[in-house]
Length: 164
Image (cartoon, rainbow, N blue to C red; front, side):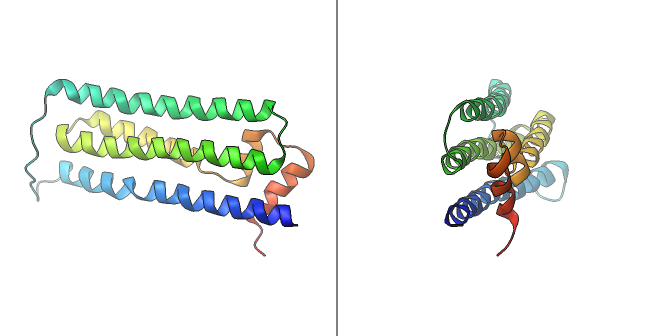
């Protein structure tokens, strides 16, 4: 049971950290979106060079691709390795936090890009970002699938959500 308690504790910390990384960019983007689509408020934003519009959009797109490929490659390495469940969970947590930090920055970049340029591409990119956030949030089922767990390890991970 001691092993299960340690895994539960690590999962709860991961879950908390991921929720914080999700929670901050969402209202920032929402406020910027409401500002750019409404006429009730006006903020003086500096005029930035036009080429930065597409450069920033490209950087955000590249970060989205990088987080997806990086997480996928990390999971492939973990599946091939012969680590015990606690080590796998630690590595999974590191890969997930890296992924969500990148998604965090994509959200902030999209908000800034929309504020400065009003380009609807930033809104579309933020919607894609939300899709990755939604589909990537760690749950026991996703952990089992990502790590391709079987038997006792699988059962132990499903025990994470059971409250004591």
